[in-house]
Length: 368
Image (cartoon, rainbow, N blue to C red):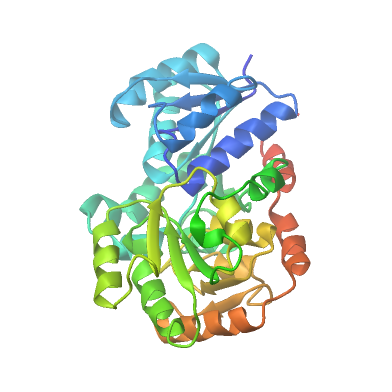
């Protein structure tokens, strides 16, 4: 009998998907029987499925769209009746709640919220995304528990009118047992050869939320004083705009590169001089914890929400205002000139371990 089911749309290369995979593996290694239920077994993280499926049963609903998976998910819940279903991301969370209702089972549903929803809605261009806070207000009270990935996200949900007694803040499980091995893997890129200029690193989807234009403008300022390079890992619909911006600022390919999605960004972090998070808003900011674990100095926007919590209000990395390229440039330059102790940063990363998150999630599970 299944102990825990985890429901995802697919295995896209985002932070929420990685968190759910970490939880699935962690629960399984603790002896629980885990099902990973996927609408589509596609995306960059699908490469992990062969290794994962040795411990976790992978259920493929084989639907092209999330909404079409509703009957199949309801059938799965009726047949297997797992004690608990954990889901991530808003559309998926709502389908999970509808499927339980359709199935008429007693399965507890834990929905997880990985973004600052009111801030994301204000920046959204699609009507559906602008209405997300209203949908969340209607549907999420039906969940047994609402897990927010930071205290800032939890407060945002309360401000939306969701019942505070159902909301639990649990930081993302980023630091896993195999994380240190990934940090030590080699990076096949000439910029990380000995004797090369320092590399400033950005990591994330190339979209408006991550606000990489501010980072590019800041980098152009830093280059006036320091011989440095900028590498931005990730893929997204803003790629051509970012490349054009770099060119317009006189930044050639020997100054700025966009290698796309990489399976192991942590090895890049371990060799970078500074990790910069330039986001306009976040739910948590996984890359900040990853950089801490690598012992890499950090500059981050003080956006809602997550960075100030992770960096203890600037104790473990410099915080700058959202969209302030001049302030970001100064913070990067200061960090290049006087980097913090790497062990000091790594000790902070321990607060965001898989072990700690599993302990907190287990307190929510209806199985003991």
